[in-house]
Image 1 (cartoon, rainbow, N blue to C red):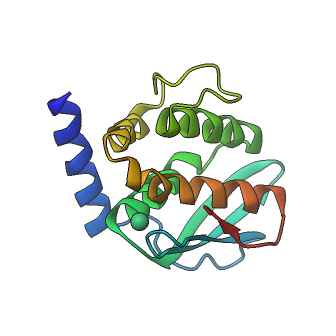
Image 2: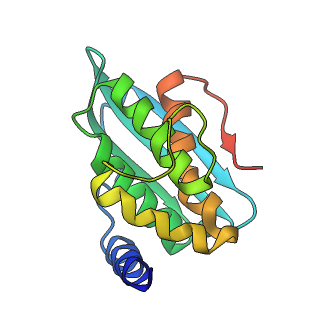
Length: 152
Ligand code: ZN
């Protein structure tokens, strides 16, 4: 378990220092805002979706290292994916982070690749919403809900 924790911390630090896709996406056709009032995390997510595929993704915002690292890895993870695969990924990551199986079938994080390191956040229950925020925001952007999402 301590190996996972070390890896988890390394990945968070790296993505916090050098967030991927941290910019405004010109030409985005889906956007959503997400807030985690417990921690003060704010994210604006930009997606460019064409023919049912997420061609590009980017984000802006401010928040803790975990929310930023999660948004960084989430955008990296969904670029190039069909919308339905991104939705499936949401369910699997959400199940891993919360320990709640939901629509995903299991909570192991198997097959999630790099995203599996976020399983380490379960050791820090107060930070789980920091990690899930970008994913909820992704879902809102894909559904075109238009309303800011909040973890509360
Ligand atoms: Zn946070």
